[in-house]
Image (tube, rainbow, N blue to C red; front, side, top):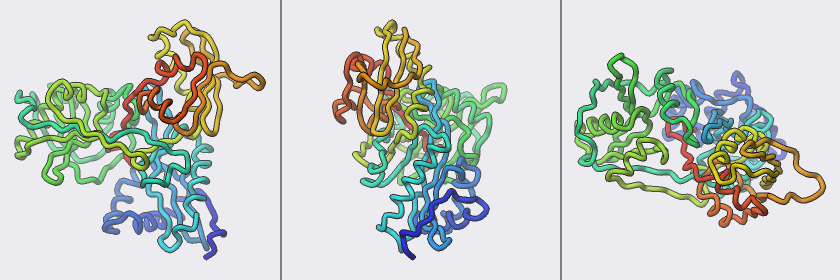
Length: 401
């Protein structure tokens, strides 16, 4: 087969679903048949997989590449942007290193923009996705707590086992617990999760869910992989389960730095482990800068309102490697404007792909600007930490793709 004859299209679920699952199974299936069951049981079915925005490559009518999109709403403060999560990126084993995935990825990014996505997020291999404009999104944290330092007070409710399935009441509890926490998904996302997690639920006196934990015993430690509810209840429930099963410590994965539970842990005794990757791991890219900033205008206005720059008026240009967007700012009211066509912008933030890190508050903004040569001019130097503070973004493991 001649790679130059690659045909790039959006997959049709009726015609291509089983071929896509087979191709991705040959790439990621260890063992293969478990992957097939995983795709049919939760990953493609009962999931936010977007057939209209994903891209496949055909050679001779056969599926040889796949760029998959899982769509969801992601919080940036009180705003919600539409994110294309990229997963199951695959090339047929006989056709690798011929540029097929590069062409598929470029077409996939164009399809995501046409489908109305604002940002794109993936968890990828090193030294590959950088060429498509993806940059580091965040560090991956784990809070490690000795069981002896967990509370001994009773939970105040009966723990019962639940399966890792979507429930409207638990999704609502999660959304309330994580409101305003950047990087978290607006649920529902997956309707089923076939991971080997154990679910634990407790209710209040009226029978309404008060909290839940999804846990896993792995390699000698007890891990909490997803949870929601009030911090005291979560800690008491984790302590009860860990002591009952004879564990010495509990590891909380995917726990947002600004969550009530993380704040509570940091006031006690714990160890915070952070994994940073120069390339690979969680990576993010702007798909449509103008749309992203338009959805953030309310959040940016609120940030200005509580700052020393609340009364500032002016125009701020933001430019990344692909787009330039003008923000009109009038006394803490931010609106999208039109970039000037003649004179250069007096107040501007110019940079490359790393501008996306500012949008999601991936790190200290001044550190990001210094590290990647982002060039603030005029009052942009003062606006930078106000508009784009560190938000400690993080996506729960439940919502991964």
